[in-house]
Length: 232
Image 1: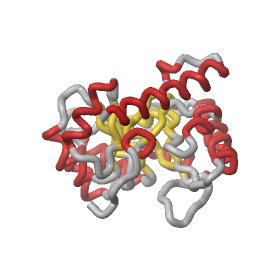
Image 2: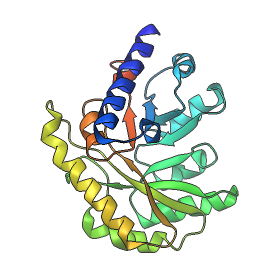
Image 3: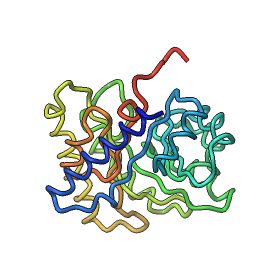
Image 4: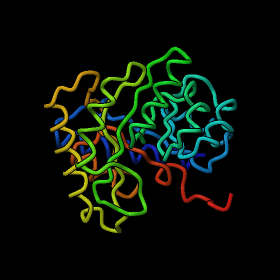
């Protein structure tokens, strides 16, 4: 557990260093601890080190862990979400990061109305156009924004993307830079019911570059908890 604390301390120091160079407030950067495959007892112990936001890729993992994680934590669904699974997490998560279709947005809106809340969401873009990843391309983004703006129980709060893995994160800097350009362009459109507050990009291998290019929401798992056992 001491290793997790040391990892978090190092990550926060690096975030502070980037923010200092840019004149940004590190307090405006949300660090999401990605708890994929991490047991609940380890997650609960790690919360003592100042973690306030945790991210899960799978609905079933949220369902399994949710009753056993202490209150006061913001849950983020950061992986692909199927429409038929929205009902299982609509009352549990603080934000859904992976909205990439009108039909999914409409289902979230319907389920959110059913539990009497407005669900904050991010739209997922596939800037690098990787075939193995979900997300919108630029040709789809503005049409989706116009449709989603009409929904009453869902509010777009920003954008999310994943860059291709690269040993040298400088190789994917262009992805984050392009994403920031899109983020600012959407902001200028002043869509009703749409606010560009959060730019979720950057993971263990590339979060410093993402932060330098404007990210204010980082999703870090391995960098906090160490290498995962994906056989679980």
